[in-house]
Image 1 (cartoon, rainbow, N blue to C red):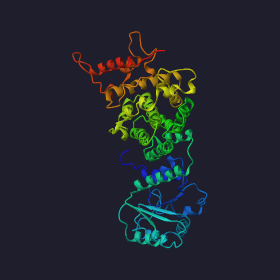
Image 2 (tube, rainbow, N blue to C red):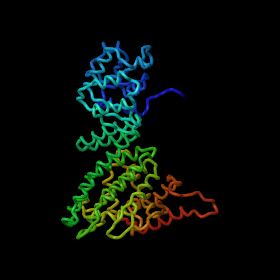
Image 3 (cartoon, helix red, strand yellow):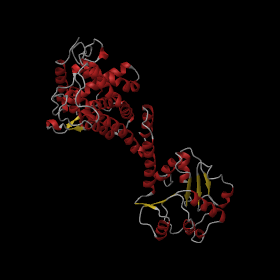
Image 4 (tube, rainbow, N blue to C red):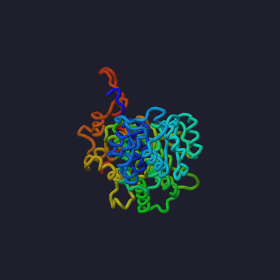
Amino acid sequence: MAGVKVPGAAHKAIAALVRRGAVKLILTTNFDRLIEQALEAEGIFPQVVAGPSAVEGMEPLAHARCTIIKLHGDYARIDQLNTAEELSQYDDALKGLLDRVLDEYGLVINGWSGEWDHALVAAIEGTRSRRYPLFWAAYGQVGDSAARLIAQHRAHVIAGASADQFFPDLLQRVEALDVLADPPLTKALAIARLKRALPDPIRHIELRGLLDTEVGRVRKYLATRARLAPAMDGETQQAEHDEIRAHCDTLLNLLAVGVSLDRDRQHTDLWVWVVEQLMRARRQADGTFHEFWVNLDHYPALLALKSAGMAAVAAGHDDVLLRLLRQPTWRDRTRAERETAALDALHDYRVLEHDVINSFPRWGTTNWLYPRSRLLKDELRPVLLPLVGDEESFIQLYNRTEYRIALAQWMFSVRSGYRVAPGEFIGEWQWDNEDNLTWETDFREHADRQVWGWEPVAESDADTFSDSLRQMAEALKKSRRWG
């Protein structure tokens, strides 16, 4: 309703601080019930002391979950303090309670000038023993009374902060301490925290920090990798791939869940940032090195790109997929290349080796026609399967995403040095009786044409985009190999 006041950002942040146990007592000179409303929205029903008569029967402060002391009364009462004379002295019961609070609790002040509330100024001045610190946040320059109190109690001053800025920021900083103090999260706990933070605009810093922590773990691990392979046998190669995959497992799951639940694309910049950070975690090779071994520094970035890309396709967000492919960049300085987009830098052929993968003992005697595609499919199954529900849906999603990545490489690649990446999506049974690629047909029927730049054309005009699809299909036919 117009004109009705509702709790603002400051009230909600204070209520969140109470919910987490960081705040137990609130002093206010306001008459309204906005802070009570914010607390009740969090499921907290505070003890309210709004006048001298409420002091005697109140629950002890140490036992109450939250106490609000309304120093000037409540709007619903007739004993409010308004005039300069009324504000010059408190009732003995209220003054005694205030003296206890100022002696036994730390104090954070925001939104109070100290110019008119003479009794409150006197109470703070009379508190000689400050066992706990005093923090004073003010949007503008403080007045004489406030300056005197700040000097007397050696208060820590936070300048230029309104209540709606200060308290949400304080909440985020307190929550950040949880992250620093906590041991590494299990995958399940990390996902649970992401789901709580994802829809809350106030918790975007927590969300960024959660992903930043996992990116940091991968970076730290990659920094320890040798430049030379200790052995060339399949068992050694498989162990290295498996170890890299294990170090980014939590991050892959966070990306897949995050992208799939980010329905309004509020955090696409964050998903792009993660892929780019992983790309840039690759060290520039120097001295003597095995190129195929060093290329594996980009394996976490490739897995992250595929995980996030599949989640985007599952959500019907081709625009997010294209941003993931085109916006993250990396530069290989050993080849004097310019900044290269993910769709080129993380091309399957640039990161993974055909013969190396087929040498893995995990396959037994099987020799895969598209070993890169098979490896990535197997490694991403545990990440995406819970999101789609069943094996058939997972395979469909994987093939649909591989086709779209190939199409992006066909249309937007600048200088990868490789043709579009083939995979199991062009293998046997992926072509209809008229030799049309199943996933091209699927794309024609379900793709977001506007996102891909597939503009409608008149019957008399050439459909150049449709021609490109046919041309790519012909190119892919040259790469198909059936056993």
